[in-house]
Length: 400
Image (cartoon, rainbow, N blue to C red; front, side, top):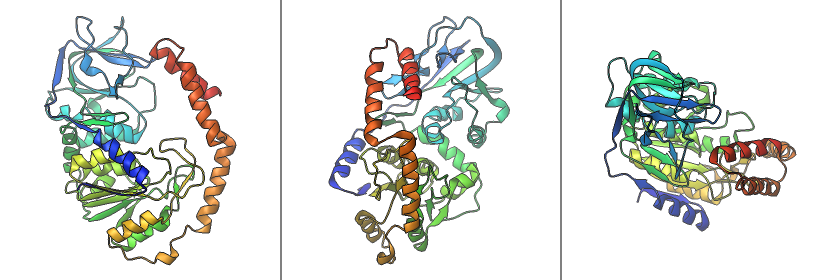
């Protein structure tokens, strides 16, 4: 059995249903080679993609998220010209986890189709600041920063190589085995002086509006039972990978840090602590990652929050404790710990309640948030065109 869930029956059903819908490709991915290819970027509409010399859009350049994809641009009337081959790798996003999963989903192609002088291209269709770790990932793939091109406007190349996406994310997950090739290469290219068998990635040093209250008490129990505690946000990316790649067991709260399991070389299991109380979380995504690296998935519910929070950004503060499900996990792991001292500390409760009060002052009640989101979704249905709907939704979110 490759999954163990310590939670109530509702969450067990929800998670099992989600992971049963994960699709694994059994076809070999391909790379389109487009002679005289144009990588088009339109920042006003956030549209981008690849065209051939005959002005035909190259469908394999569509960046899918579920059944939908990015906005398709019009064929550009003006463009720069670079007399090199290029590999199209998608768009730049500032979220580390989504970049890791979706924007590196074409990186496998860089291992098979590299040509002399090739440029590796990301489009910056939203004019964001380029995250420093983008270049770190490319460096680990053996790609010099000088060969990385960030396009803010359209450009024509000698040839454009378009690898298929190897990972697609929506309400479920689709992935191809090729997805892991780039991560194996990156892990191999990172020298490691570490050999920790068990690693816990902590959120406890994040800013107070992002941290998970109550985590330190739990992570201390992991530490007492042989886990190395690390704080990813305080470390260089390569050092994180150097530590995690040799671990057999990886543990921590649900979130981006656990996605670094992609770099594990001899994975045994990944333990994800659920930090919110509604059913929806990232368990199905983490399960797919764990499948790729051959790790058993262990999920445990630990939320003791007052106000139900979401999993993504801009959620209410979260607090976890030694729930009955955490007790079951500790028994399952043969942990030694003092169960009578496992209530949430008063200082954590006080800090959580202060942050919750501030959140409610700024955002209103949970009911207000639900009504607002449904209202925005309803009104946007009457706006024709995906681009216009997208703009309208963002405008409403900023003004309501």
